[in-house]
Length: 116
Image (tube, rainbow, N blue to C red; front, side, top):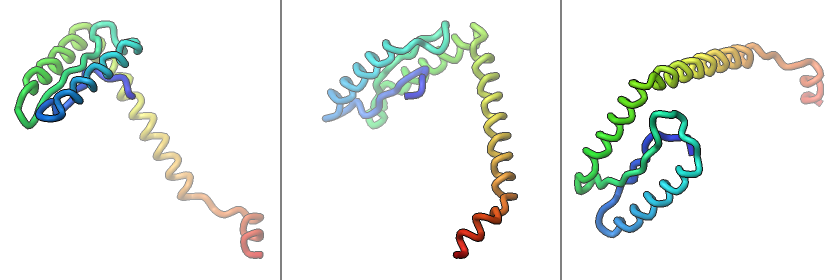
């Protein structure tokens, strides 16, 4: 699992309420084994029901709280900077590989082996 800021378990309604609670408990337990990616925010797990329109406001509040906490600590800008650097290198690498593959020509020994 990618390290997350918030896990939202949907379908906490009807016959699935107990399953959603179990999923919430399991995700909470799993997150306790991981070190948070920042010092200002610990990942949280909540359950919602889109069908019953419950918990959606709480989910939004948690997202806003996370963003505010990371912004105030300066960690948001650090995370975004790392993200931009990763994207840049991914785009550059993909572009170089694409150009390299497009310019490949079969090697002479490969052509002779294939033709026999």
